[in-house]
Image 1 (tube, rainbow, N blue to C red):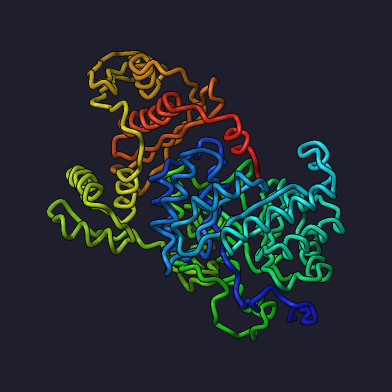
Image 2: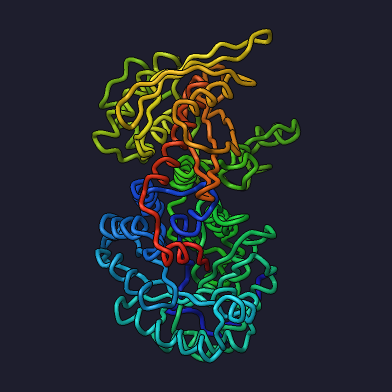
Length: 550
């Protein structure tokens, strides 16, 4: 049965027959505990998001800190080219926020200011301490200010899902009249159900008089596990931009997952086509995303943020294309579509073919990395090639996944303060686990110490702590095998918590020796923590800004 589409209600302009993908991995995704990225890491991800085909990249919150300002400015300059994506910066509905965002976005060929203010009664009463009239006046003034600085302005009524609909319509009409070209409807606390969310979008199209002058966007969190379902329902009701993150990372339970939304629209195109005014059989893509870049982007974000992808995660999880049941295996062998609704290669997941060996040269290594989508600087290539040669001496067969692991490990931009020089352990079922560790300090001093622990990794961490002397609490330690086999590369991700800063810091490393990987991951996290402790503290206004959400 074909879906019923109310053609009498105008769609967002121009009459979009596709969905704009607004990626907020670098802003909202970075709010995941422990997922803080430095400027170089943000730039690396932004370049990949451009290759992925994201229409808009929300690069950060420029007023939140000098580091965020610099990162947004750098991304605007290097990624925000004429042929590249629109680069967006978040700003509260205040003059200083908006002017700072405009300054950071100035180098971009296509910049966008995304400004917001809360519109639910509970937020206005207890957080803003403003009346409805005051909020309306702020919206009119601040959206107009943003539009005078950068023509492309997006406005978000924070906590729209819990706002009074009639007041919400007033706010949106005011924002569009003041110059907003996109109005974004956030489900800030992940409370709304799909049918409700669809009704909100439909209500906006029916009741906001100038709704057809702006693109309707949606933003949502996954607290109840329905963020993607909410977005798909919103799309059916006329939303033509979705704000999402790679792997669904983000605050609390995360954001709507980019790869799930994109692949739902790709795989179920005949179902969604009528909602875009397209024939059911149309093969026109419903997004501009280059789907073979999805898996690579997922891996990069996972490695750089230290946020592991759960094995049963839709689309990009390790088990997404695996079959253990005998019935399923038999069916797939006879005809793949019996139990697979998409081809793994559609998202860029390649087979573990042998691509290089110990006799392969630098040029072959560079060429293969380019084929895999890696664009490395000369310095990064040198470091990665050394790691490749070391791996080739240990592993007889090297796969694309192995190459991705070592390259992602080497291009991580960790502050090089403490450096692990050597680690040696002694353990067994009748021995006390003991570790001897040598660390090079930021002052260039080489220190060695030994410690015992409940196991070899614990002993290594105890020894490192004695040398580094940076108070912390280990709150997560995880190991993941990149490929199968006894000589597989192991990826270690750890998280440390610092009581004084109230923050979590992640570390990640890959090695065929899991003890070495564990030690390097720990030092990586400690370097992030040490760097944060030694950096200039943010001003009170910046700390306040950093806690604001959409």
